[in-house]
View 1: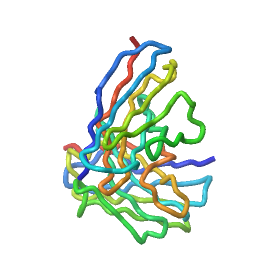
View 2: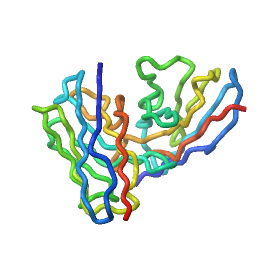
View 3: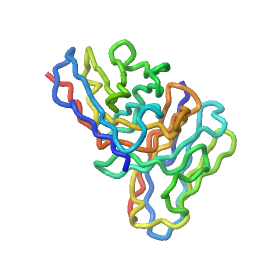
View 4: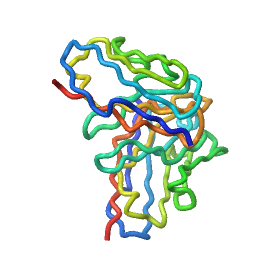
Length: 122
Length: 107
């Protein structure tokens, strides 16, 4: 069974940093691109970042470029999102999501974690 | 960036109704349009990918179609489990973008 479990969320002050992790199991992690998608309270979905299976290709939304860094460790089946210079508008539930394609990036997401809440507030 | 505009933003329907949700892209995305269902407090669930392909395990009452830059999600006979919010998403180019969502409520 495919499982994605996020961790690392919490309350942080504006300007602070946080590192989110996503532990993957039940599939060959190294074959799939991975993504972070967020959802502000009561709002819609916003794609944050994508990383290809071998980390060769990385993409960010303009809203987080230069502040967030996505990475993965295929030996540990884990995905991370380092978030620096956090702002109030980064407050959201952050979801880890698997790309649909094995061996090829499709840009749509077939498995999602349960999400981890990040709150940026003084 | 490609803008995705969903309509309506909400609708009320009864069990058994045929429901149609529309998503319009701001430019051509060919068939790179996907649909998700989200229930309160839960992660989104992929329903339809590449405009009309049904994700494994999704009931056949869900279907998708395209006409140029307009895309449609149809639920042929609304079931109690279908009351949720639906999002479209384009996977044609980064930044990947979602529509604003359509909340389907019980009439």
